[in-house]
Amino acid sequence: MAPFVRVENLTKIYGRTNEAFAGIKEVSFEVNEGEFLGVIGRSGCGKTTLLRCIAGFESPDGGKILLDGKSVSRPGPDRFMISQGLDQLFPWLSLKGNIVFAMKTVNKRVAIKELQRKAEYYLELVGLSEWGDYYPYQLSGGMKQRAFLARALSVNPRVLLLDEPFGSLDALGRKAMQDLLLQLWGKTGTTIILVTHDIDECIRLSDRILVFTKGTLRHTLLNPLTRPREYDDLAYREFYRKLSRILERDKIMNLTWADAVLR
Ligand SMILES: Nc1ncnc2c1ncn2[C@@H]1O[C@H](COP(=O)(O)OP(=O)(O)O)[C@@H](O)[C@H]1O
Ligand SMILES: [Mg+2]
Image (cartoon, rainbow, N blue to C red; front, top):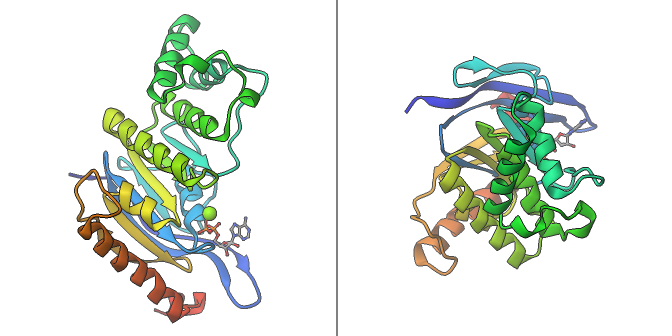
């Protein structure tokens, strides 16, 4: 399979703090079409920066990003990012109205009735068909997360960029959303890049895992587990230990940005 997303020597430097630079440095990897890629690393290692560059919100200081062979540098409906804690719905529109609104921006010639029918379809996909006429302030946090997913999928992006999307949910809500995301991925075949600092989430969802440390891509691991992946399986525990050892080792090495640059 030809690589669908290609990140080449990507560098984004925000500036210099007292002891280090901040951003990401010379990161290269590829993602296949339909793949579920996980990106894991400690807080501050550059995960959000990476997604923001792919989304086109940041202009790189070096390197480039290709989507299906074409260089991307601006936001577009072919890439949809869900950012933890930052996403909002219009409070004066119903849930269905919010989704119709999003679709309208990319399907300018489609009749409103057709968009409404599609919005209902996407609400049903995320289990919110009963809630289409409700307003965002009438929904729980978990329901809003579902609505964000419905809205994202409704514009039919080629790549879904998820930045710790379930971080605000409790453990049960989080697992339910992970299961839903897997189901949606199975149905739509959308390429997904999921950023998380949660080892379990990363293992349960991803086909392949990139480990970031201080702005650099340190390791790439293939997930050896078949789905469904259960916490108490022996192979699951083994892979969990392997990944957590890698994250722990990178912490102990206490790589500075300068080390990464000189590496
Ligand atoms: N807009 C910005 N201006 C300056 N520094 C930033 C900005 N955004 C992120 N950073 C810094 O870049 C590094 C990587 O941040 P980020 O990509 O948000 O990491 P993560 O998502 O892995 O927690 C951090 O040191 C952070 O403080
Ligand atoms: Mg982040």
